[in-house]
Length: 108
Image 1 (cartoon, one colour):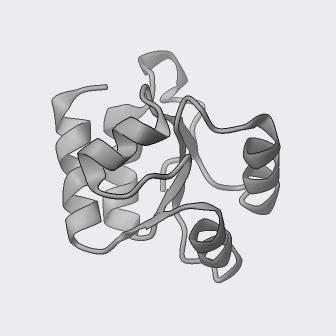
Image 2: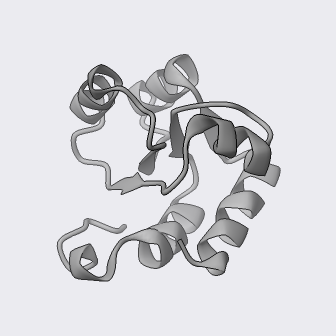
Image 3: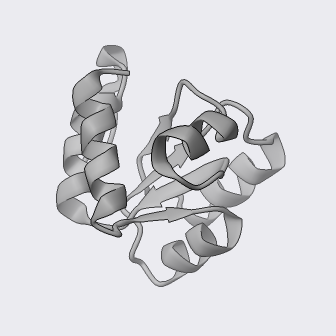
């Protein structure tokens, strides 16, 4: 992941535009406040399926670190996150998606 992506995600966290964990993510998806789903490397397949099912139209970003590293970088341990701001979501989608998937991804 590029440092620009880390910085933008960190800024979104500080701005209060990121939800951490199953319950918060689920709530934001249902309230249509979520714009991007992010998963850590240790997210279970059950969690991935559930969240992708709820947010079927959302772009998905696979983070290259586990939930412990999420906690170290962003202050909260979680295997699933959402970005709840369209501006941050668009920037993250553009900077964090692998180059081969950028054209295929629905980025706001």
